[in-house]
Image 1 (cartoon, rainbow, N blue to C red):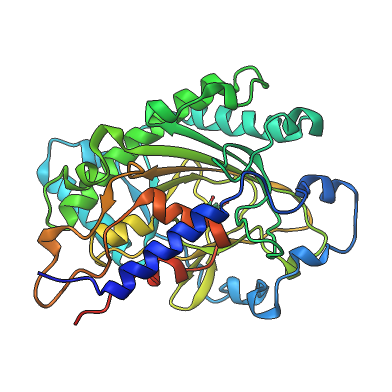
Image 2: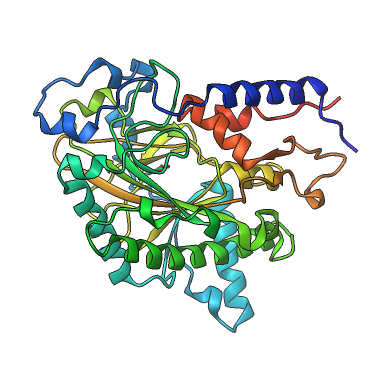
Amino acid sequence: MYIYPRATLHLLHLHSTKMMMNCLQCWPEPVIRVQHLSETGLTRIPERYVKKPSDRPHFLDSIDTEVNINIPVIDVQELLSDDMSLRRKTAALIKDACREWGFFQVVNHGVRQELMERTRDVWRQFFELPMEEKQKYANTPRTYEGYGSRVGVEKGIKLDWCDYFFLHYLPLGMRDQTKWPSFPLSCRELVGEYSKEVVKVGEKMMKILSSNLGLEEEYLQEAFGGEEMSACMRINYYPKCPQPELTLGLSPHSDPGGLTLLLPDENVSGLQVRHRHRWLTVTPIPNAFIVNLGDQLQVVSNGNYKSVEHRVIVNSVKERVSLALFYNPKGDILMKPAEQLVTKDHPPLYPPMTFDEYRLYIRTRGPSGKSQVDSLLTFHQ
Ligand SMILES: O=C(O)CCC(=O)C(=O)O
């Protein structure tokens, strides 16, 4: 049996109590919409968005001029096949992609192309609405639901060049459709239909990820709370930026939850994945979802899976829209390494913690690379 050092637990406890107390009901400074800034036609971005030189995108670094590297593209249709060997072959491709990249694109996933396109279009129309209409949904750091322009609640932090809309889809008790845009008229209906279909893809992926760890197919889903798992969506809107070389649309981060299924902009790339110390720009494949592993899978798999750092660059020519569906654990159950993956030689790397506690921790500072999940690592006596 492994004992988590008291100091670690104490630190976590202190940290979360302090965070709870600090967690604001409103943002620490007036919120400025990035889209508004962009539309004023400014030629220099405000200081708040200028990253320090080491955090700026180095455009040459992100483009491999010799070879065109992309994250793996996996056809998942065969996961439904009756032929066991075809299913195993696809599962093996996913296993390799998880080990080498933590990111991959899936095609033939079963979500209708027309549903994907309409949902993305409806969000594009939402961001094109007059500001007064969008402001009706302005969010606060209490639940983050609604129209937002920052993540971290610490006063004075650097900001990203992005506005977003955040909503809860599951569990049902957290779904409040009155907080979703009522205009465009089809928005609520499309979001419901789209999320239902994408969650099904997430369920399928969780089974494969479980089996690939040598666990029962249902293990990860159960660890996430079974039918009470949670799912939320963040629709990102990256306006045109006059000085894209100085800022980022989204700072480096790993996703705090389980799995992310991202529908990127079909016309504008921007997502970069850190791979072997380099930032690589993902080239989206039409009608694919970009799947990546989050911190909770790193925790439950006891480090066998790694969440991977990613960020978003912006450009001066075209705005970009992306839809991220986060497949997450239920908020109040303890997430900890699976016992089957803990041995004498491979002790538990992470202390038990609920996803709600962890997310609060993340939201204090906003995106911070992999420092947050890494700070949970326990040291064994
Ligand atoms: O816009 C993208 O391509 C990535 C978005 C993302 O990383 C996020 O919403 O967490």
